[in-house]
Image (cartoon, rainbow, N blue to C red; front, top):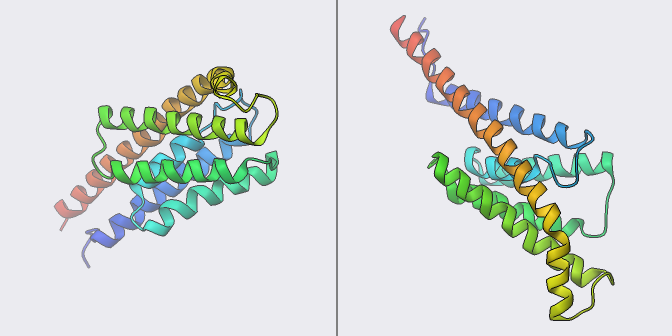
Length: 184
C-alpha cells in the first residue's frame, strides 16, 4: 500500500482548506465591525483565484454573502452589491495562480475601487440624498470616501490573511506530500 497523495487528493485538500478559509471570513462578517471593514471583498478575490471550478468561484462566496445577509439584514442595493462582488470574483479569476504580493496588492486595490465606484453610483441613482447632477454625483463620491478607506483596509487585512493562510497551507500540503513520497 502506497503512502503517496494523488493529484486529486491534493486538489481536494487545497479546495477544502480554501473553503474553510472562505467560511471563516464569511463568519467574521456577522460580528460587529466598522462600516465596510469586512472580509467580503477579500473573500471574493480569493475565491476567484483559488477555486478550480468556475461555478464554485462565484457560487461559494455569493452564497456566503447571502448567508451573512440573512443574519445582518437585507437592503435596497443588494443586487448592486452582489454584482460588484461577482466582479471581484472575476478580478480574482484574472489573478489566477499568479499569486505574487505585488499582483495580489494590485487586485486588492482594484477590487476596492470598483466596489466604491459601483456602489456609490448606485446610492446616487437610488436615493434622494444627493442631487441628480454631476455636482451631486461628486458629492456622493466624496461622502463615501470614509467607507472606501474602510473597504480598502478590510480588503487588505483579509486578503493578507486568506492568501497568506492559503500559501502556508499549500506549503504544508507540499511538505506532507514530499514526506509521503520519501516513505515509499
